[in-house]
Length: 103
Image (cartoon, rainbow, N blue to C red; front, side, top):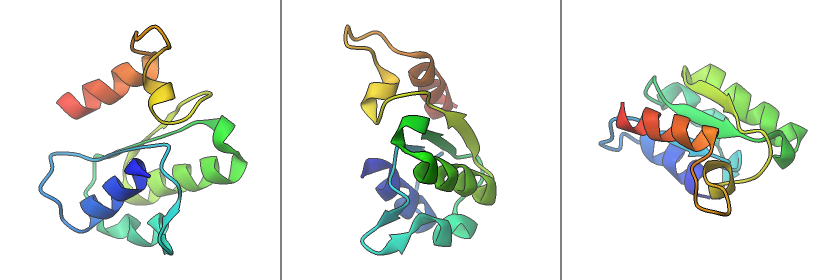
């Protein structure tokens, strides 16, 4: 949910330096994220894992392409599970997300 809400907020003009969608569903409350891709500021990051399903993965890649964002294949997992391991260590994906957020 957080990834989708981030996309909607960024498209609505939220005062943020960047936006990052981690495992967000491709629609929220009947609003498809793709319909907002032209309103998103360039330079975002979309992270999706193939384990979320082929359709979700394809829609996330398309969102990144249409919005000018970077796309990162999350591998396997969902949400914060892509960013940290069970022991608390940050994953490769987590390091990319942190670096993007830091600018």
